[in-house]
Image: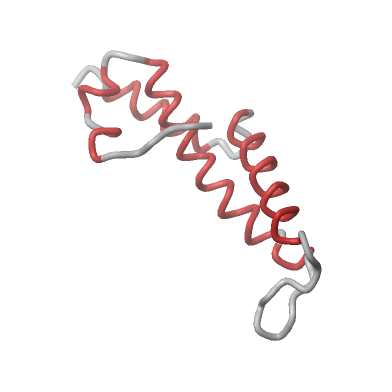
Length: 96
């Protein structure tokens, strides 16, 4: 998901006239939230030394791939429900 956030991303007129934009913004937010959640949940899956440095070569790349893949799928499928809530809120307030 390639969305760039700027102060205008959530500007009312930017999303007001486009249900697709509202859903895209909501899904992007869910992706960000899911990435943080998955990153925290997978912390213990890879070996670290006492300083938190990964011990195995390539582990960082593998972990990032897993985190990115899982978070994108969670967001795309709206599994956490956050995008649905945000979209509903934006749709309800689009007319105001």
